[in-house]
Every structure is written in structure tokens, then in C-alpha cells.
Length: 339
Image (cartoon, rainbow, N blue to C red; front, side, top):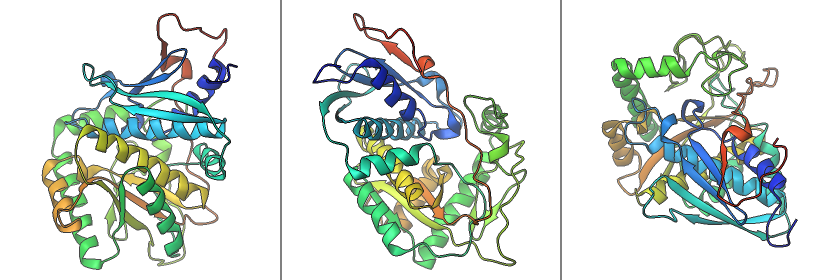
């Protein structure tokens, strides 16, 4: 290992962890270019879902989450990631260039990297146990450090407006034949699938938890988590937003989503990202106006709460093999074996 950069096995190990990031329909729409002195994050437009994500926002958010996962992984391995976002104006798919500097892993690095393998998307009902304000505050602070606003929606009227936007978006999408065909293509996967949404992690029918309708996936087989009899769902809703709506802001929102999810996982909370209301311009405007008072641009809704203690964790969605997600810049040393 050279003093100023990690060796290639370390780089590949960090990328393997970065590939665990959440992405729209688990499409993993990114590629990594490895150089002797840097790692480059590239958007993979061949894995875009145009009916679900017509303007590519979900793709950018997914790539931002992968970028933050990479930063966390490198930090835990003793390397500070120096990130240059949109480094090449001539190539809009070149989202980030990452250089390295030695560092001592922080407690936060170790905590968050440990949450990567434990994080799951949990679409089931949560218990009625309240989420402590301190937990939400920690998520909000860390999202802010990542460059985005994470806004808990606690007012009853505002929350009704938010869930109404989710309902309207779902209705519009389910009336779109291209959307339903695309969703069927990317869901109902078996446990050996390396991308797409597992049948075992989605319910067999539409679910509404309290006031919040979940995205409906075809061919789901996941049983509902058992809670107390007539127990209300105590899931909290938080809106992830930025003050601008350019490519860098959306990418940073994806990074902030990653840190919020990993923080929640590290303190035992279950999480699920809800993006339907932000995938259509009309319902996105409803969230920006009534929910955020027009002061910021929304990108994702995060649902979090306590899963029942007796409920098994949701199944782990597999990821593509690391070697299938990387290329090497000319002249770059390739290790003999990849993880």
C-alpha cells in the first residue's frame, strides 16, 4: 500500500460495501471506474427505469446513496474520501471523482459501516412505540452535514397533505400501463436475484399502515409483521429536501438519505424510503408547497419506526458481483482476484 492511497483490494472492498446502497427498485444504476489515484462514480443509464423515474431523479438519488456508502466504507478502512462532484462538464454521467487521504476512523465511521449490512427496506407495519425525539434529531443533524434538510412531519394537517400526495401519485402511476409493466419487470424476484425487488420483501397486496399507503408491488409474498391487537402504527414520516434543485443538490440528497438510513439502522429503527409522491411533477409540487411551504425542493420521504421485537428481519436483497460494477482506467493495475 502506498502512503497516499489504498491498495486495489481495499478499494474493491469499499466498493462492495458501496454497492449495498439502496436504489430505486434495487436497480443499482451506477458503475465505478478505478484509477491508480481515484475512484469515479458513473451513472448507468442502461439501468434507469423511465416509467417510474421519467426525469432521472431517482437514479441520481440512488447514485448519491452509493457515493455516501463508499465514503463511509473508506472512512472505516482508514481513508478520507475527497469528493469532487460533477468533475467533467462534458460528461453528465460522470457524477463524482473520489481521491484519498489517510485518516483515523471515527466512531461515526465504525458505527455507520456496521449498519450497512444490517440495513433493510422494511415495508411492514411498525409498532406504536414512539420514536424518541433524540433519535430523529440525530438523523436530522447528520443529513444536514451531508448537505440536505431532513424535515420531520409532525403536524397532523401537514401529514395528511403529505399522505394525500402519496395516494394521488400511486393512483396516477397505477393507471399508467408502462409503469405497471416496468414494476412487474423489476419486482417479484427470487432470493438468488442480484438486482430488482424480492417477492419475499413485498406484501402480496396493497398495504396502508396507519395513514400511509405503501407502494404496491406485484407477486409479493411477505407476511405482515404481527403487532399488538389493534395497535396503531407509530411510523414517523420525514421529508428529505434541498434548497436548490440542480444535479448536485439531488446527488447530495441521495448522500443524506444514506446517512439518515444508516443512522436509523444503527440505533435499531426500521426504515423505508417512499418516493412515489416525488416521481411525478404534480404531486412533487404538492409536497413542496403545502408540506415545505415552498421553501425547499423535496426528493424523498423516509418512514421510520420500531419493528415488532419478535418479527424476523426482512430478507437481504443481494447485489451484483463487485467485478460486474467496475471498470479500470487505462494503465491501472488490476488485482489478480476480486471479491
